Amino acid sequence: MRLEWLEDILAVIETGSFVDAAKRRFLSQPAFSRRIRMIEEHIGAELFDRTKKPVQLKSSVASRQPELRELIAKLREFRSDLKQQDQKGQSQIIIASQHAITTSAAPALIKNLATINGLTTLLRSENRDECYSLLMTKQVDLILVHHSEKDEISSQPGFFNQHVLARERFIPVCLASEESLIKKRFDQGLIPVIGYPSDSFLGQVLERQVFFQLREAVTIQRMAETSLTLAILPMTLAGVGVGWLPDSLVASDIEAGRLKELSDALPYCELKVMAISLRDTNSKISAAVWETVETYLSD
Image 1 (cartoon, rainbow, N blue to C red):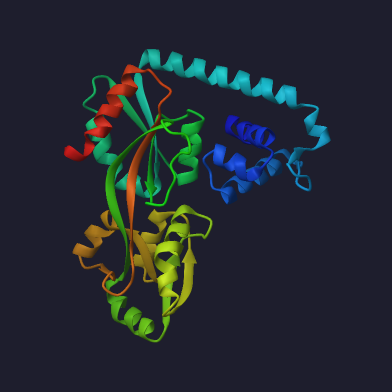
Image 2: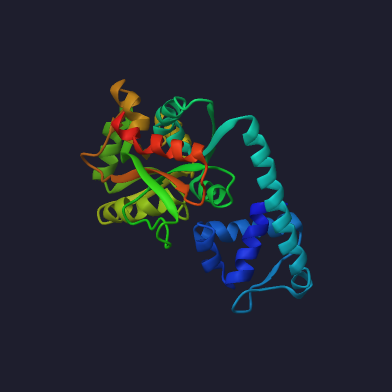
């Protein structure tokens, strides 16, 4: 049983709501509900009585609540002790990055961090919700995630250090040899799309900022769907349909003539690449790291 799973359960107990617990855990409500279901499937039993408001632990589980809290406290202490012992032997920063950012802003930032004496970087590639979960459970020191202008990073002022590393356009692209066919189908009122799931961050952003405009003129035909941005690129290169991808990720393919940008005919959206860390640390390494993050754009 993973510590973050136990903390998910505790969040529901303390808030009495899956919605409020999701906010506390910095996850979208659908993603949090999926995690609770996954935990229950792993255990092989339902933990919560969902017919009651507020949500309550089932009686068979409620009697074990003191043990649950004690286990969480011990696991937190154990993890903290191991991390401190490890840091005595080496100075290391752990970064969780959204998959697409691992190939755009992350490499240059890691190069800058390498100038800090004795510092090594461990990079983890995760989805956006998991990046936040790892940060809140202090399993990573820094996260690199996409944000739109409408995002609320935190309802608690001063909770995070935040810095905009870069700005990216999520642009529509297609296989260059398919451009004329795509435009012909568009004129006929149909557009084949490689989409993101509706409950994912990018799925919601594109729905709000892109697809609602398209639906006024055409029918969106979802040819394929994935939450992994890096998987959309090869599908686009295979001619599956139109994919919305970061301009930094597709620049070389556009320049080489393999992909064609369709922003002249289709809408696109702009996102920020954010570096985010918690403010509850006095580590000198963390201070040096954050200073490097804040000077990233000027390099």
